[in-house]
Image 1 (cartoon, rainbow, N blue to C red):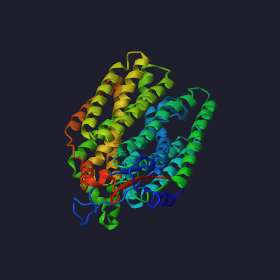
Image 2: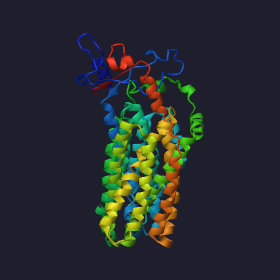
Image 3: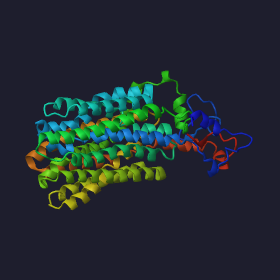
Image 4: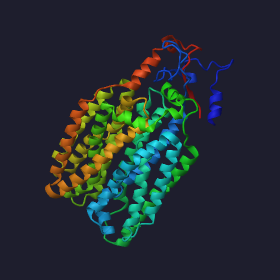
Length: 499
């Protein structure tokens, strides 16, 4: 059913009391999460400044489709690194060169994030989604054509296209959550968006070691690599087609007062440069940018170098190295969803972020201390604990940033967070790799523990200025009688509309 038809189905009429707040009609009275638009002359305690809002079932289709193409892209980040010894042999390059197949994802993000967030603000979510899936699809097919030992430059070009696509993907979960979801479910929706990225990384740890065994025959090895690349390209192509026909820019009626307010601002009044300057002057947010970068940069380093660390202590265990990576990310996915639901219920952004950060540090210390004990089952357990907190931190950072920076663009704040993560990811991966080569894995992991300790201390210093939640409370306090009585005069109504 079209969106227009859905809206017509939900309009009140003489025969159907659609405004009645009961579960059969899926109606929920909601104050929204913003005060009235600029220039509104209505009184603060009245209802005239509030606008109608609706929720559509389609929002779940949008966020799950985003999660799928984010999965396809993030899978390829670790596709080479988790079997780095095999690709080193096939292409005849050094291990550090294969490390760059992961680090190119981080490096590409840094110069392109600002023009991409500008494009997001100017053109919207659909254009960004189309570009992302087109680039991702093109990169996968370039890789298909690169399966010869003398074509490393071609496979690097394919990986570069995929890394460029990631710039259009990584900061989108919080934007999609804000544009499509109600104020009581934005953290959960953001977690689902991040969930796709994490699941892709998990598959990237698990599948390549299974599809590409460590064999000596180069023709057989090329055959296995080609099969892996064809599967990846087929999935990316299907997702591109789905985005073309299914992905929608935004709902016709906004889900919250915050979105209604954002839509009411004339484009000529918005300045991208002014928005960036405002964020850079926001001290709590800039502290979060640094601490987020330290935490996620450590995760990037661990993921990129995991194969090398495991092989040092457990030779010939490439498949189990992938399974350990899978354990890290699966545990993190559970952590992400739990944290998202917890935030929607409690709104304790500062406390939850600090607790998860501290436990990430503890998990990293335990992982570093047990890696060399000689028992793989211990590594599985400690890596899972590390992943639960370190990867579970990702949606916390996104949502805390939105709270600290409201009403600035979610894409811009997320972009700055991810830019910091890429910078620290490159630095930590290169430094830890060199430390591991010269002093061993324990020294390399202690190096990361030091920076996680610094990040934990800095997180404790962040002032909890929950601007979005404060605006939400002000809107709900505008006329409490309307919210609780289900009055026909209630100006802001969320309706669960059909597709």
